[in-house]
Amino acid sequence: MTTPFNHDCDLVILEHIETAPDSTQASLAAQLGVAVGTINWHLKRLIAKGYIKVKRAERRKLRYIITPEGIALRAHLTMDYIQSSFHLYRLVRGRMLEALQQVKNAGYDRIRLQGDGDVAEVCRLTSLEQGIALVEDADAPLLRIVGLKVFVEF
View: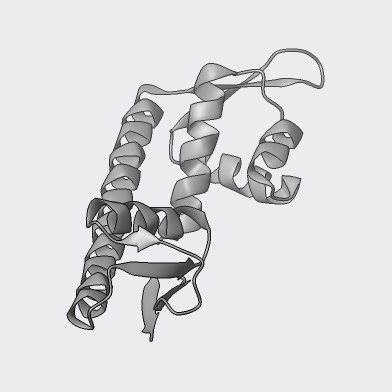
């Protein structure tokens, strides 16, 4: 069974090879921020499953070619990624709407938001969409984002 990292890594490898078949294991490793050995393991697995073929371009240089099966896998992994992203977006948005309802029920129309990254950005946009101002005022309730969770502190 592959892990989410394997799916993400496979997707990036397949996309990269499709657009740049002369990619080296070192360039793939640098792009993904992993060790060359990790890329080597993924490539061997993808080759064994028939998603990638290898041709010798020069004496010491290999050329990776994505097969039709590899193109189908890339499309499948892309759809999985999109569906997973939307699922996480809806999850975070739902949690933020619940937190904002608590804030509104307590009589507030503004909040402080603590957190960063994509989850905090979804929370920021949801707040503005719901007419809740984002302020730095210490009297405003604090919505603290930790991972995918939203904590309300009055």
